[in-house]
Length: 294
Image (cartoon, rainbow, N blue to C red):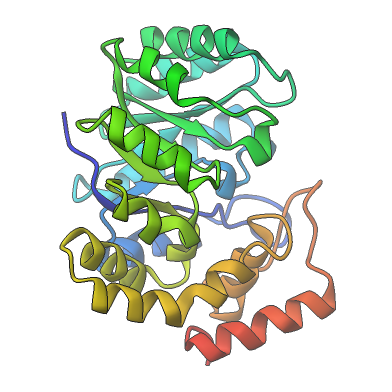
């Protein structure tokens, strides 16, 4: 199994003005990410607006990412649903593609399952998947927290590779790292990258690296190599923009910044819509200060 370590980008899905997927922009983004030194790529996560993609579009985005990556970096393909049977089906389908190395699946949203329900859900996904599974814990999106004791039960099963931990609780991340020292723990929050690595994490699945991939990869790599002076310098410079990426719902701000950079069109699919003008102006000021927008 490939060991996940470093900074991976939860890549956005660019759209054209008519709402169709902008394949040219997506190909360019994937190529730029890899050329900038990113360690792995995550198509069709929340940042990719996956809930609004048709089944065919979901598969197409992943296939394009695989094609452009050409085996240069691992691919973690998103396969989430709040219907366990559908999540398992998607995991089996996408894990059969050559070039997919891992499957990312989040806790079921809206249903608010118990810990036992989450355990059984992820067990079904792992049994269906032909590739190792990355569990995604994001209570702010799903309404439920996957507790460390439940994750420890899952890790006893054979097909789990990592957890993307976006609970926002450093104590929870620390507990997981301490009790599962050989298991890969990735931060799901850019601002928690350094704290997560400090307590034993292996890196981050990043939103911010969509717009500054080289610097985010350098920051993560420096921390993993115990070069905390360099890591903190980059962290202090880019922390305001990391935080600004969430002044409205992700991926609104990060796609707005990419549009300011001329890399994509600023197009979303409902129920997401353009940012409030005042917040977009604030975001642009922060992006300019960070040097990502000229």
